Length: 506
Image (cartoon, rainbow, N blue to C red; front, top):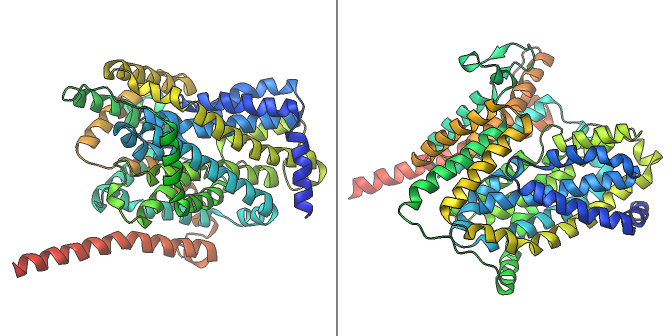
């Protein structure tokens, strides 16, 4: 009851006319920022942060959180309509969202992403409200061994993403892990894999650069090739009947969205994890548990609902360690943490006692921002769907420009632009060769975290590899990882034996 009373007090802050206007403005701005390839919540929060000195801290954090939420919603727009992740968190949405759009189901895909995001956001905010203190204790219990085991579990759940070709999937994971080691060593500071002695590689290979190249430029090259055979412009539209049909279809996916909400929230609350691995893990789990896993990557609506539910849940989960422990759970919450320090607030357990209006005003505003996001997002769907009616030549040119701008804007280095072009060519070749791109993306995202946690554990345990199995949480994750790794191999062996028996009998 005490929590409910504090939440109601928070609503008295967040539902003031001024703060409601801030939520609407922040969500709208975040939606468009998130829809721009290469931009995302980090860019939006960084741009607006200097302006927050003009308003009280309560309104400032509400504005930044609204931009954060809006950008998470908007990231799916370009993933679906253009095949380019608006942000790294929306990469998994591209896998099935883009094929749905190419099949004339862009409206349904956008409705799915909006509603799934709303479900994930709502469930995660409720979890945040109820379990803030206990979950903070759980997050604090995660050490390097647990982080490594969790990342390994993420890889093994993704083994089945290569159209049941385990070997190609593992090759792409290894390639991604190699690319993730480019740059300075995390512990010794020694340079590694500095190709052609180019200074740009000292800072590593940006995940966003790889994602834009592989899924942006690569998609353009593939579209140029296929458009010679089929120059028909994609016909996309949305009606109230389609909206109703989409909502009825989504009602059947409540299990997928519930699982994605919990996965996203718990992964998002882990420092250095964030929404990207959460969405990728949710996608992998949805495919593993699906009755028709072969349809994933070809326009399965579950492949849109699962990652969108997870990445929005993770955005809320990442706020938990920031508020309770002073540890940001994502790059965006790191900026929010810096803003709080500038405003004279000290994140941590005492913040709930000393600044309850601030904390519960923020929590209650997440409910408001989540509701505003789904309304504004669905209202703007006709505008987004209109983009697909452009001729392929115009669309390809526009996509290339957005790719270059999106890759150049974060670092403002031409080195990243050349990398985008190179990864675009590589992505096109890999797609033609039927190599799965999702494991590559997963590996370069989680590679640095995996390496750091592995080496930290070995240093702390004096080289004892069994330490990963001796701790309860990490041991559980390791056993689950082994199970998921062996499961597709067992299926492959059984299929081979079945084919052999069929050949023998014939």
